[in-house]
Image 1: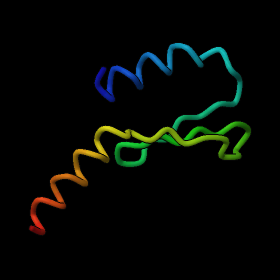
Image 2 (image 1 turned 30 degrees about the vertical axis):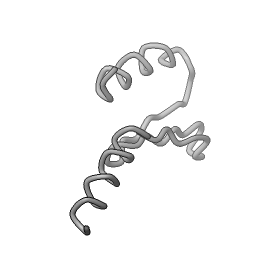
Image 3 (image 1 turned 60 degrees about the vertical axis):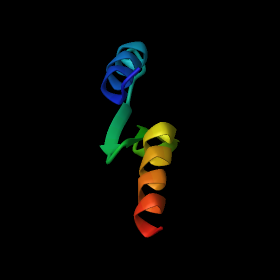
Image 4 (image 1 turned 180 degrees about the vertical axis):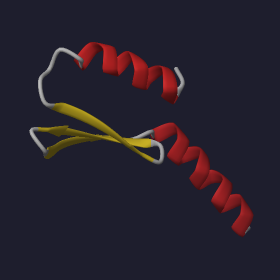
Length: 59
C-alpha cells in the first residue's frame, strides 16, 4: 500500500473522531487530539529505502 493510499484509508477510519487532526511532515504523519500531539506515524519503508540510498552514495 502506498503512503497516499494509507493516508486516505486512515482518514476514512478516523473521521468520526472529534478534534483529531492529521498533519503531514515529509513522509510522516503527526496526530493531534485537542491540539496536543498524541502520535506519530512513520513511513518505515521509505526511511529505510532513503537510508540505503544515502549509504550507497557514501561508499
